[in-house]
Amino acid sequence: MSELQESGTSTIVAEPMKKKGNLKSNFGKRGWFIVIFFGVMLFFNSSFTADGMNVMVPMLAEKNGWDPNLMMTYNGVAGWISVATAFVLSALVTRFGAKRIILVSLALAALAFVGLAFFTSIAYWVFAVIFMNTFCNGMSFCGGSALIAKWFPVKKGLAMGWSTMGNNLASAIFIPVFTLFLAGGIRLPFIGYFIIMVIMFILGIAFIKNTPEEIGLSPDNDPSEFDELMKSEEAMRAYKSPWTPGKLLKDREVWLMGLGYGLLFMATVGMVMQFVPRVMGLGFEQNMAVTFLSVAAVIGIVASYIWGVIDQKWGTKIASMLLAAWFVLAILFNILPGNWTLYISIFMLGCALGGNTNFSTSMCASLFGRYNFSRAFNVVFPITCVFRAAASVVLGVVLGLTNNNFVAPYIVFMIGAAIALVLFAMIRMQPKEE
Image 1 (spheres, rainbow, N blue to C red):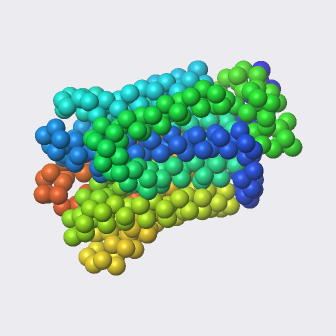
Image 2 (cartoon, rainbow, N blue to C red):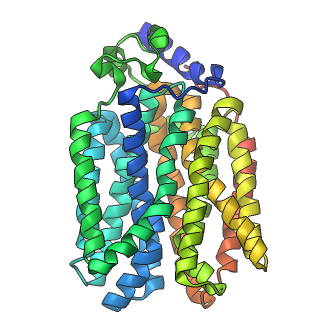
Image 3 (cartoon, rainbow, N blue to C red):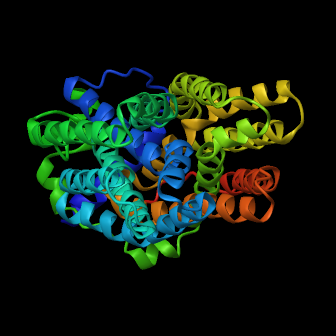
């Protein structure tokens, strides 16, 4: 067993850093299914907890007589609750495998979402956002990220570059389709997306496997690397990670990753969650504001792949620092007066949307490797969730206090991105070998 642990830890951890230049997305049919499925889970996560708030909050507030700023605050509190549940869900991924947790989470998130069409009590809103924040994390970041790390230990940057296009598609597709469905009644958008989630649930049962070895395939779809990366599926199951939660919480890089990516998540969610009301406040019609968000999302689809290439080519640390600096400039242009600065900000925001999800997973895999990724991500991801959820609270509270003046919360997000840049610069890119 000791030989297995030593060979597993040293080779698997070091390998991703040794082969940055491999830029071929030859994942194979089943590998591409994993990439696309994870992308769809990210789409639902972003849609239900961030992008969708642009339309769900004002619509449900008007329909049910709820306070929209209070709804945003509740969503942020639900995000903080999901931090604790992320620890539990990530631990369950390690114990039972990613597939089970993804499917259970997908089912529960779908039920909570469709219930918004039928319940009118503000208490149900609180229940729904807690379930959506919790189980959207379970089906995407907790479960989906573990799948990517197991299937693509070397090409994780490229795989995440493709998958995180799902985040951008949420901005481009969810709101226009939701608005289109509204022509058939208030309940139709919720029922329509629920049906799509049911279809994904069925596909997940049929085609998701926790590791490629389960169906006789090689990690990264590269048979030539099979022996070096993983001797057998039994080796993966038998491996006992030395990284306990207590040891991880004492690790310097764990906190630098968690805080840094958490601050970037806060900026990402904060900029997207109320994008439409923000642009309408600058004098644009709602249709134009939605169009701007869709344009930013389309830009982000291309940029998501580019960030993946930058990650693979130059390394996750440099890519993360570039992303943080990019965010600072994007937010600065947004709060400066003038239409041209707004247009520049929309372009830069679109470019930034896909990067953060790429790098938080990729950095964790680079430092802790395929064998120890789940253990490490169990701790890193909940730390990032604290700040991701804070975006909703900052918006809800500050907008309520300042009569919907977006400059104040945006300055908070900009400072957070600048701090993230410093934190990334402090990360030591050395594999965590035992």
